[in-house]
Amino acid sequence: MVRGAPGVAMPRALRRNAHRARCGRAGAVTPRRLGFAAGAGVGWSQRCFLSLLSSGASASAPAVPRASLLERQQGKGMVLMSLLAVSLANLALLLGVFAGAGAPIATPASAWHAGQRAATGSNILVRDDFSGASIDTSTWFMPAGEGSFLGRTQLRPPSELLEVAGGVLRLRLDTYNPTARVPGDSFWGSEIATRRLFERGAGLIVRARVRLVPPVPPGLVASLFAYATRGGVRDEIDFEMLTSDVARTGRRILTNVFDDDPFSVPGSARFAQISGIEWTLFNELEMQWLPGRVRWLVNGIVVREETRRVPDEPMSVRLNVWAPARDFPAAFSSALQPARSAGENQTFYSEVDWIEIRRR
Image (cartoon, rainbow, N blue to C red; front, side, top):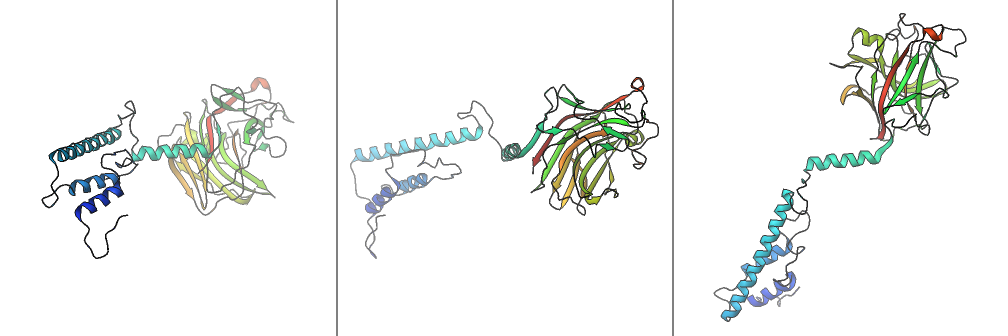
């Protein structure tokens, strides 16, 4: 920076030359110097240019030849034209027509949503659209052995492949169980579970698009849930569609949660009332497992929030269909009974369009 001697006024021409030394030559106009950087208002070189205009020839300035004045005026005109061109370019960018072939400029709201989509994509742990011919066994397994009998239902083994067709998983329940020790003593249901256990961390979101397939008899349970067991206790978060309740009210779904509870404890069950729901159409169920709380959502609407009982153990994510016993009175129906032979068999389904598990 050029300075005059302390206490001595700097001559006007010297001050103008010092300013030019800081700002650069007035005629050397570049996009950067004209404040083209993102977020710039009046650019640094624009401010330099404006001060140069204000420091031009005045009554006290020495006389200069007419040709020099004309050149200076032409130079100022060229800079003004450059500024105008840059301003028009900035305006065109705002209108979404500059170098964008008419593509719209993202508003702050749409930019935020785009960021959310990108973040969501990077946080997805499992996404299954069931686009193959069978379940992806690297992601899912079918429980067998101990713990594979629920209520009055034996879960079918992995050797009995589930149907995947048209981008939909079909969870099947048969009234005839070919593996029953006594014919007619049990049903044959289905369950898939993730091989991976998911920690809650900062938050785990489980979403699935599911439905009951007509005809829908009373006495079945179709579930989306997270589950872990150790030492005779369990952690669990449930969505359960009870077909007996669907037949009676048609507008509710059962939610439940367990936190280190023994199997003799019924958890914290609560029905969520949902206006206008139709369970034979696809609906989106969502469980949000968060620090200090659990939320249940149906089609994007929160239907329950729990803060007193929150699981903390890593859990697998599961979907199933089964027939409960009398110890689950809200779901049990004596009208639905196991068949004694294959010829008497009836088959019922719940369907899963897709499922997604992601970090919050």
